[in-house]
Length: 318
Image (cartoon, rainbow, N blue to C red):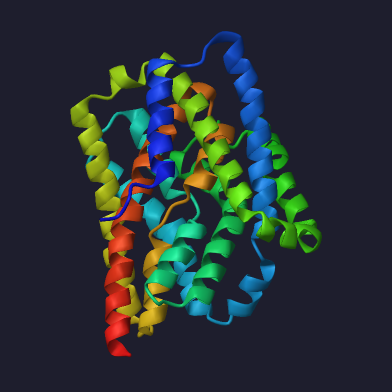
């Protein structure tokens, strides 16, 4: 039986702590400055870790790479808008905002690569797809959020400045310093991983504290939480089915099919939480990230089962 992910436990504890002991007053102001600094450090480290070489070496498989990008930044928003159009009253407006924001995010990096490896899939192609998705997401996601949500508030002059200062500039700096710091980052990847996860937990706590003060649990009943889980599961299920059908219809080898399914269906918590903190007001960010937190756990569980299925299949083919 698989052990519970410690990060999942810590994430749940952050939400519970914010629910019972939300930060207020001057503490909130201090934490907002700290979280801004943490977000900058996170994207600086992403710039160091994401290798351009991995993209260039695998761009020849343009059909697979293009399809993963289309699933991530086109199919997901279309499905999200479709579900919202069919079931507008199933969730309140804030929660639907979170679902649509989730649909605009890039794919994950670490879990996509790890699960592709577990499934004996095309690991090199997954590295390329996940890396390209995250680099593109820094530019595409804010614009896509503005288009999908039909609001100018998200793509305001202040939002552009915040994105440039907190996300883009640190990432570019990391990319420029990658030749000097990549080996150091590789040697200290466990420390960096702990730092990244701690930063995410702090951002989640701060954002949820705002949401609790604004009355998130008064707005969201157990029935609505169940509906949110249902929407997240439906979204993931639709994407998994579509990517499977597309992979077979286009005649992808089984290893490429794995990369398409596991990279095309994922959404990044590591990118989504800080982006929500930058793109949305503090009073809204906590509502927005709740669907992402739930989707993150559902995708890990379901995609691990899929990876194990492909692992057994590929092992029997040898």
